[in-house]
View 1: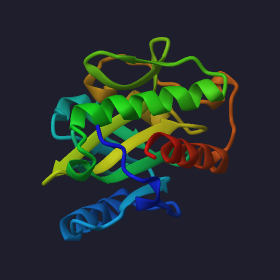
View 2: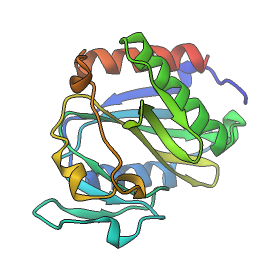
View 3: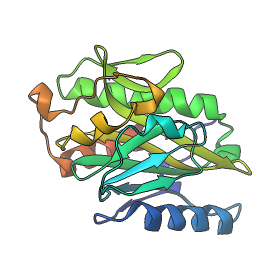
Length: 207
């Protein structure tokens, strides 16, 4: 994996946004970018929505209520996004960085684990289940799409949110999977702190 200069990354903080709106912007950015376009990392919170990745099965949506359901082009299964969850979109030129999608997944999981450790939470990854866990409870979710060597989508981290909608689905396709957020673990550093930490980590790790 080649480490490109972090100055080639632009960090963008977006106000709470509908998932479809941000998704469309990501796709347009990726389709229209050129070989020297700067990579971008977007931070956002979404209005409540269930998203179905390419591997998702309709039966994993257990209860249909007023929460919108969106079929997405990202990898993975079904998940939930809502206020109090930090979503981080990685719009990276993997070919330019000589990075495979497998390396990106491993890199991202490691970054989240390090971030949580810095806030007093011991977390780990699980083989065959992309994301990050605290014990047997899942706290962070991954899903990417690669188009001509460029990636979009990214990861989400549960910070301080209403977790009840996760009971309406089989999260990531796993029946009975328990979900947790930082607040439940007695940690709530706030979104701005986490965004600053993640920005610093990317600058350090992708120098």
